[in-house]
Amino acid sequence: MGEAREKIAELYYRSGSVQFGFFRLSAHLDNPDLPLSPYYLHYPKPGEDGSELLPELYSLVGQEFYDICESQSPPIRPMRIAGVPKGAMPLADAHARLYENYPKNLLVFIKEQASDRTVFLGPYGEYSEGEELVIDEDHTSGGRNKKLIRAVSLLGGLLVFNMLTVVDRQQGGVENMAQEGVRLLSIFTMDELLRIGADTGFATQHQVDEALEYRALNQY
Image 1 (cartoon, one colour):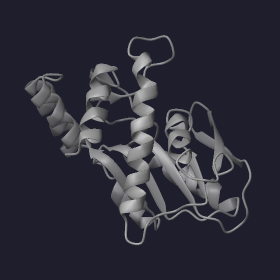
Image 2: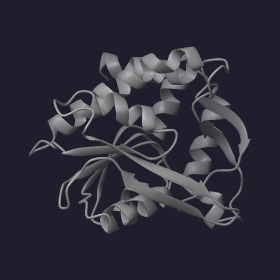
Image 3: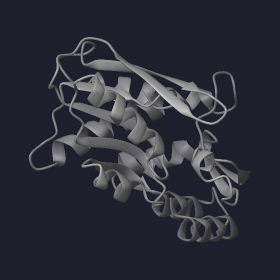
Image 4: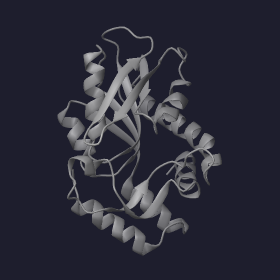
């Protein structure tokens, strides 16, 4: 594992972006009978413990997203970049900054959450019909929000062939997006991030085992 990925994993644990307990996820909106997740991935809000580490984390993730794009054959060089609101918007900004057409290459979506559904509005910003948009995300379970935001992007005349995520929870997101004709690329799988936590002492083996079992039994 490269030095940058090791640092990203460390910052995830030090910032409290990985938590263990019992949590509801976005996947529960479509699958309310799913058991609660024994782990939760979420960046701290401004002012909360660990939030002071986020600027460094975002910068490293943006660079890693760029490197992933450049490592593909052929390289992914999108005209436009957007983050799934709101958690991934700083990641998309850090990613978009690495291209010469920043900030014009950065598009914005707005998410409105009702009790029983999620609605994405946009994209807002400067773009032309037929341009390729890469969508950045922080964490992916089954790809529910990615399908929704892609549908809105297509209605706006953009093309979406590739998406990036920091953590693939390995619960069906890659396969579900492939059925949509989209390649989902990640910095980590959940298994990798958990094992790093166990190896570095940020997580107990019991916590990791519970999370691995939950992931294996609950696919979306």
